[in-house]
Image (tube, rainbow, N blue to C red; front, side, top):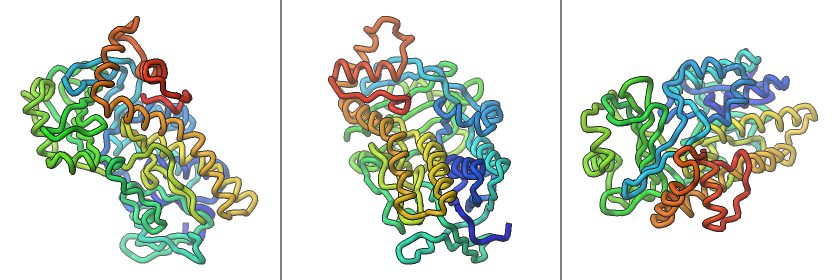
Length: 409
């Protein structure tokens, strides 16, 4: 693997980048994917893989291994409102698993399919010629090494300096989510296979328009993943630090007191930045395609970023394979990615944005949604996505374009 000129270079070996590398290799494209970490690496995240990804994971041959490594299979969701009333709804079962293991399975799938991989390679910037991306200069085991390519897929996350260089970096405080996670032992009252999301006030100064606290069961017994997810704007407006909010929730809410009265942190809180969107941003630049968190492709209501990254990676591979066959890597040819990815991802991004804006962020509407759900025949065995779509279209009168990608859970 001594070539420094490739057809496709993928920067970042997370789920999105590894998916792109897998499908590029399957389609016969010369591809190298690189990552700055030594693998397997940990990823600070909630570790959620939605069931909408299962067909792709099975196609890649890594589903069984990932499923065997899961910490919990979520089947129901408990939503707790600001007055600590709650509803329980069914969701399409999805797995929660440590990303140190599961991301590595996706990476290994790409290598088995024929993609070349290089770890400990940090792409430091973009090689630009006449406004076109031609590769990356970087450090390989701290030694300078340039890699050129006909097209570069930028999939290196929400702090991407490559995204900044292209002017594509998203920095909207109302859509940027600060996330913090810790493992907790001794949690009381959790229901097996049920996740909990809390939409509670942040002290005396308002709330975040997304769930501020969540608990996901983890393995057996009383272990759980405890998370905080707060928009940058809400955190600023609250005047609190993230840990001050955690202490407030633990000590001043009914559920916080009940769940954590005998709990201990197994490790410290660790945080990450998750930029969300209501619509896919410009993702194609001359010589480059951006996917996943590098272009803020996470949905903004439930903070799921992996589906958009993996779907984006698969679409990018198909577009690039066609470009390679025609030997045409012009902007117009690459820009077919924008059309295809927007068609696949925008319905879900827009629906979740609408769900956040019109329901989660309106206290009286959310209260009415809870009341309405409890009055529906069959409760508590109702579909989360079906209930949300029905309420928003029939009660709120919103124009909902329903598709598989336009479902909140």
